[in-house]
Image (cartoon, rainbow, N blue to C red; front, side, top):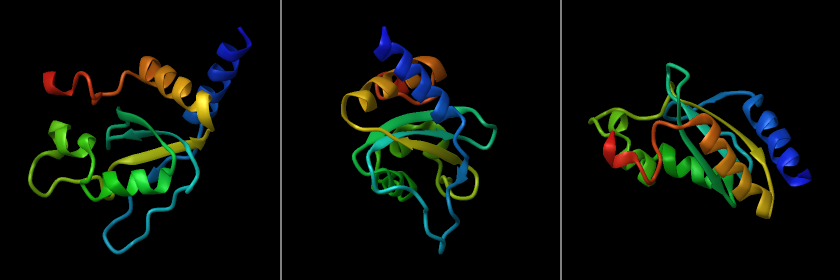
Length: 123
């Protein structure tokens, strides 16, 4: 039971993190180089993606530059010229090892993102 409570606390911490806007071209993305879980929201504050990474900065950069399955397969981002810059936001927390995977699963189940690797083809 303690682990479930710890995950719930981490989820609360994640959802209360400061939102950061994906930077416009020419500006740097500011994110941790540590491992963690992140949430991406669209310009209407809908959760569109939840993910985890061993290097948050690199993973978010991949999304920003169109080098991820999320960006390639999420229909609203598949239109020519549409990208994350200046509209979509992200938030994250640093989390290590087992708790990272559990928090990602908890966040996906709680936030029901618009894009998920299993269901994105149905959108």
